[in-house]
Structures are given as C-alpha cells and as structure tokens.
Image (cartoon, rainbow, N blue to C red; front, side):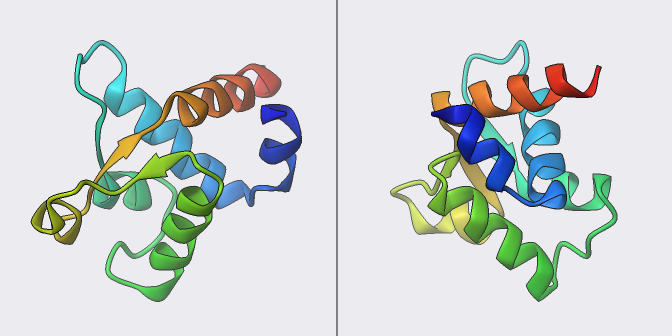
Length: 95
C-alpha cells in the first residue's frame, strides 16, 4: 500500500518527506520543520509550491498538523508512521 502511494507522490514532495525523516532520525518526538525540508529541495518555503507539497504530504497521510495551530503556523508538523515508512522506501529505491 505504501509503495503505490509513494509512486504517485511528486519527486519534490518525496524529497521533502525524506528530509523530514532525516530530521526525525534519532529523536523521540516526530517534530518536522517544513522550512528546512523545502530549502533542501530548492523550494521557496514561503511560496505556494511549498504549500502545495505540504498539502500532498498531508493528504497522503505522511504528515499531520498539530492540535495547537501556532505550531503549524510556524511550519511544524508531525511525520506519521506511514510517512516514515514511505521515506524509508523511497530512500531504499534510490540506492
């Protein structure tokens, strides 16, 4: 199921997801910062393209907003278990 979703995801969205996974690696809380992920793939974190990529990841169930809207307003999201699995799968396919 994850494999099919990963194939449908844009390369840039997958790039953001992989960066978010690296942010999370070794940390107990799955806090992900969108700005760094966007910059890592050459996307303006304040632009509509970034918003579209975040929407893709959210709709796929790979990231979630926090209940506290101020965290999301500051670009913080939670990576889901499904998002971690998808990022791992995408990274494995690369090499």
